[in-house]
Amino acid sequence: MINTQDVLETIQMIREENLDIRTVTLGVSLWDCVSEDVGRLCDRIYDKITRRAEHLVEAGQEIEKKYGIPIVNKRVSVTPVSLIGGDASPEGYLKIAQALQRAADAVGVNFLGGFSALVQKGMTVGADRLISVIPEALAETRNICSSVNVASTKAGINMDAVARMGRVIKRAAYLTREEQSIGCAKLVVFANVPEDNPFMAGAFCGVGEPEAAVNVGVSGPGVVASAIRRAGDCDLSALAEVIKKTAFKITRVGQLVASEAARRLDVPFGIVDLSLAPTPAVGDSVAYILEEMGLESCGAHGTTAALAMLNDAVKKGGVMASSHVGGLSGAFIPVSEDAGMIAAAERGALTLEKLEAMTAVCSVGLDMIAVPGDTPEEVISGIIADEISIGVANTKTTAVRLIPAYGKAAGESVSFGGLLGRAPVMPLNSYSPAKFIRRGGRIPAPIHSLKN
Image 1: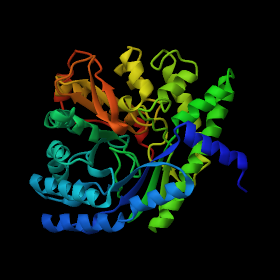
Image 2: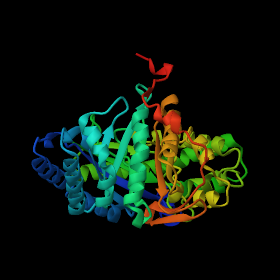
Image 3: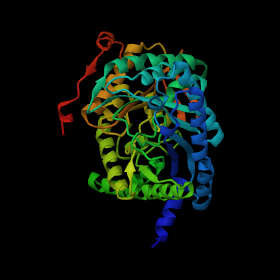
Image 4: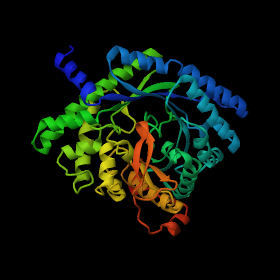
């Protein structure tokens, strides 16, 4: 039975606390598009996406109107392109990226993810060629997102791929230098990448996914912060219960939208991602949640413990509210997309090292962090290696989305607008890991990976 109080609470969450559906993402398999002829492959990709996602935006708008729930983004994710591009030339992979952009334009989505490669244990010809043109693909398209999985707990860390991604990120920054190096904001490096993530830039339709499926991500940091504020000066056990109950309500909204979208599009409901996804809007911040819990500033000693408790409570509350949970599921800490994180970084309370510690207990990693444009590629690779090792050692997803802001120094900032927000350029340790990175090879999987 519908409870009137629950309805009124949900209305308040939407109107006053920034509750929204961050994204309805339609995963589309491209396995049946494979062709040795790149032109035919591009045509099949365009036809498949536009056929499957033809009504995605329309369905999202109808759900918004019916339930009064804002759906901020409608997105598409596809099979990792390196798996269906085969031995296409680098120029062929660029043509595929352009075909994806045409398809994104045709169906009206804001991002399309899946210009991706899985290289945790080594590179195929296709992965090698796709990675070689990622910077050009991101510079020549507006809405295409790319990801590369360089490690897993089972395989260890492919340090050759880590070293290469440092070079790729630097080139992407240079090629989009006139746009604040925004190409890097559309590229993420993963460990233990999930196959059903609805959030960009890391979304793709994994090899175990169906022909098409709807995956939904919910945004609710403002709702959680308000609930903590209302709870007052209670102990942490009571506060965890407050967060769990709030996460349940937020996730039920996601479950409703996901089920309705799946019905309208006549595809399976995939998952609801339990992640708390912040925005640059005041009040819609994970950092503000941590400060409501009692920290003077996000980044203070105790931040990692507070974030660990938040992440755990969100998962415990959310998992009971949806029949299928997946993706990343936890709390995002993207610096440029979170007003509280931006403020904490600008006042010096939040450093890259503290963010790295926080990623051991949250759902993603070093996300949307601007660093000086003259940062050497080996330092970028070292940052990637550090973060990826946390994911491998802890059997969790971690990721890196760094923006070496061309022409910018520490203390300056770059602005991307919209949900990508504004990033203060953070200082880095000046000592070099170049010799370590140049060793190459693979860091072996941890002993706890041997579970069979």
